[in-house]
Length: 96
Image (cartoon, rainbow, N blue to C red):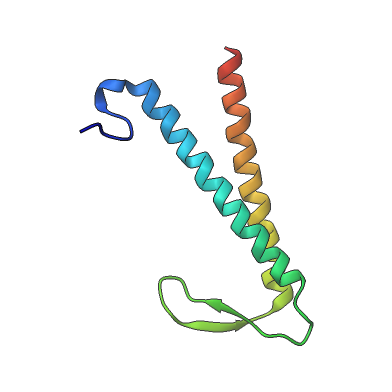
């Protein structure tokens, strides 16, 4: 039965390209999610409450909407920057 994904005999070059592609797709997905979060937070009415989930648990704490919005924008900027760095490194590899 044919297997999907990379095999050991495919060589290290193919594996790193697959890994880079997977990381790029993962970043793209995270960027889309973060854009939605930013959009939702920016469209909330001023009197709405925002809750932040405690990491690795089901506990939520009341949070400031403006702080959450600015934090979400910063995260989005960092994700975009990381994605752009991957794009640029791929372009330089192709040129060589």
